[in-house]
Image 1 (spheres, helix red, strand yellow):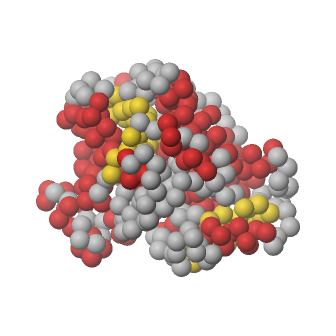
Image 2 (cartoon, one colour; image 1 turned 45 degrees about the vertical axis):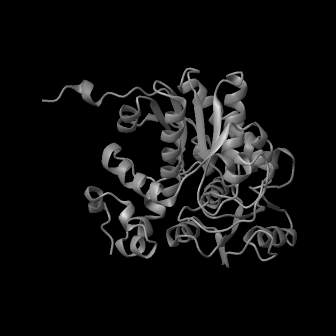
Amino acid sequence: MLGAKVFTRAFTSRTVEGFTGAVGNTPLITLKTLSERTGCRILGKAEFQNPGGSVKDRAALGILQDAEKRGLINPGGTVVEGTAGNTGIGLAHVCRAKGYKCVIFMPNSQSQEKIDLLRMLGAEVHPVPAVAYENPKNYNHQARDYAKNLDNAIWTDQFDNTANTEAHYVSTGPEIWEQTAGQLDGFVCATGTGGTLAGAGRYLKEKSAGKTQIWLADPPGSVLYSYVSSGGKLNERAGSSITEGIGQGRITNNLGTFVNDLSGALHIPDEKSIAMIYELLDTEGLYLGASSALNVVAAVELAQKLGRGSTVATILCDGAYRYQSRLFSKAWLKAKGLEDAIPQHLRKYAVLD
């Protein structure tokens, strides 16, 4: 008979009030295989364990709490956002918990799993053509204009509303600092709105008196890597990535609060992100989305830059459940030219035709 200690786990959290009380306080996971391989400590903040399933629960809650505090929305009001998915899902959850109506505009290029989930959560969803931010038909602008025509409604403006950054400054950053006992050499993650990187990064840099390096990880099709690497030159956006919700063609207000304090940036090809999805599943039992995998690739590369014995943390944004019809589809991988990116012994996980 197995001893009870095998199953013992320490619980330190207390009873919380509803969905909103459960946001945050996620575990920081040591990625054992990658840590052993690099001679470093590679840590992943398990944001997929938020009640809505992603790091965006923090931004959704923080933005709505800020709007309530400022008297911008009253009970029974409508919350409108333009989102590639996870912020909308977080908002839909929080709106249900707080009694608001939720309306989401999103690019029609996003996974069907995300669209279906939003509707199941009671949100009104408007998939619109995926066009550049400069185009007036961009999903963000459509959300803004829709909210203007409603009474008792707000456009949450996740990209440029710095309540997003503040939510991570008061929660994500302090949690990571406490969980590492202040022994953190580097923090790296990708950015869409910029809130996670700017908020957590600012806190960690302040708390460590500048000793913790803060790096940006960037997928193909984004201009942020070149912006940081060139010292502030903003190139025209070109290309695309299989990752969803990260990468950017401009400096958002959220990222703008911290971009000049970054230690550097890393460009992560899709091939590396795809391979890491499968490796994390095989070696760690973690079923993660492409942005999480990209972050882990970046954490490994940053740890190697900082040297053996260094400790680097990143964000495990969400699980693969919202993308599985793509990421684990042999046909999809082949169509994207990514089939060969997966090592032969890991292809057994691509079980969908």
